[in-house]
Length: 98
View 1 (cartoon, rainbow, N blue to C red):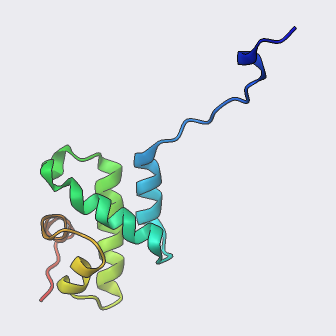
View 2 (view 1 turned 90 degrees about the horizontal axis):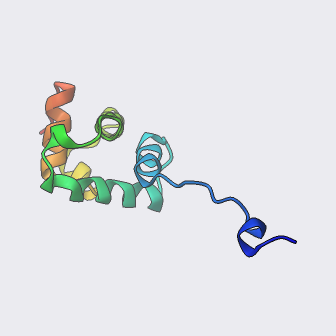
């Protein structure tokens, strides 16, 4: 005789930080990516070095891709990032935009 616990299907652990990073690393634009940028932008209450390294890498990757496609700093902000996140990512990348 099975108990109720045995009948339940196993749950898969969901890592929200990994989902956020995957969305930022993705080359596809869309609502999921915009939401990820806004979430990352809202994390400015934590100092940049305290953010997980994978998240910082994902942000730098996304910001670099946006810059390579000709976006300016204002467009990075419109994409959903906060000014603090954009400035730190640019500093890490050794780049600047007008």
